[in-house]
Structures are given as C-alpha cells and as structure tokens.
Length: 282
Image (tube, rainbow, N blue to C red; front, side, top):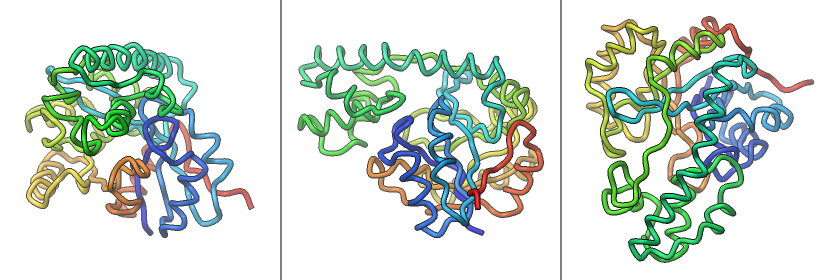
C-alpha cells in the first residue's frame, strides 16, 4: 500500500482543487491519501464526491499551534468535524488569516514591495495564507521563487514583514483533537529550514499530553534528522508517519514522495473514533 497522509488543496494553500487532488493521488499510484488543509475541512466533501475507485480518503486538517513561543503544526486525522470545541477553534484560526494577510501586505508595501492585496485575494481560492502572498511577490518580480519569501528579509517568522497569527496551544490542541475522536500527529517537527523548531524536551512534553505520533519522512527532514526522530519516537512510544506535504505546483514535492507504513496507518484508523476513512461508492 502507498499511503500519503499530508496534502493540501485549494481549500487552503494548494493549487489542486480537492477533486483534482484525489484524481492526481490515484494517478500517482496512491492507495490512501489524507486531505489536511490548514485549519479547515472545507475540501472534504468535494474530495469525497470525486474519490476515484481504488483510493481511500482520510479526512483531516493541519492545525496551527504554538508551544513555548514556537509556531508548529498539528495534523489531526479522522476527527468529527461537527464537534463544537474543535470547530470553534478552527473558525478562530481561519478567521484570523484575512486580517493577518492584509497586515503583511501593508508591511510589504511600506518596505517598497508592490504587492496588491486584490491579487493576493485572487490567488487564495480558499483559506488565505502566506504562500499566497509569496506567490504574489513572485508575480510582482520582488523575489525569484516562493521559498525566498520565507526569510528574515521578507515574511518568514520574525522577518521584516512578518505578522504574528492566532495559534492554538499545542497541548490544548491534542486534547481537542482527541475529544473530537481524532488522532494527533506532529507535522514536520524538526523542519528547521522553515524557522525555529521546538527542542526534544517539548516533543516529550507533547507525548506526555497524549500526542499520537510524529511525521518523520518529510521533504524538510534530512536523513540524520529522520534517524533522530525515529529514535525519539521509539523511546516515547509514538507512531511515525511519512508524507509528501503536497501543495500542487506551489511546492516541488510530489504526491507519494514520502509515505506512511501500513502498520502505522492501521494504528491511526484503530485509534480514530470521530470518522472513518472513505472509499469510492461503487
């Protein structure tokens, strides 16, 4: 089985629609794909409706969190999307995205970067985020590629045009995900090229709070980092996953570039009580 548990659609900052994403996932040879858009479940229905035969859809979301001043992302799988507390937090996280994005664009303009808010909004078909601003910066000729935006010079964490966002306490997020019947996996925990990462002690703290697993095999983890995370996961009793973090043409990673073992996937589905994986209607 080929299992990719981290992808994004136009419901957040991917470039494939939910329907296009599941079609592409099957064409790439995947047997299981998780749709984990940022702080939203808006793409789930369309993905389920377009699900091709032979592909299983795991519903999920990537939740924006913070721990000890460090931003991080928590992958929530197979939770009940109608559970009110987690739904309320997703709404808060999502609603904060527009004023934050407008503030970032204003700072860029103050720095002499001609980014138009109207164009950023056009690029964001779903939940708006920094990747849409970065894409607008590329179009305006300010930077050569999207990755160049996420630096101290521009909109990276702590950068000249960075604006903080509403984020959920990571320990609280684990509790909310579990209360909604879901499974919590720490996304790309040591992706230091993206900015600050939490220390090992923080991962142990999250494990003690009920964290289910850590995403190990990821484009932003080199071989040594993966080995380190596997050892840590073994010591802490955490599941390990792998995935592409696919964003369509917005990033270079391919669907199925990294995958999760059938054993870890089976454990995730066993623990999940809020929703079940979906298969195409015959």
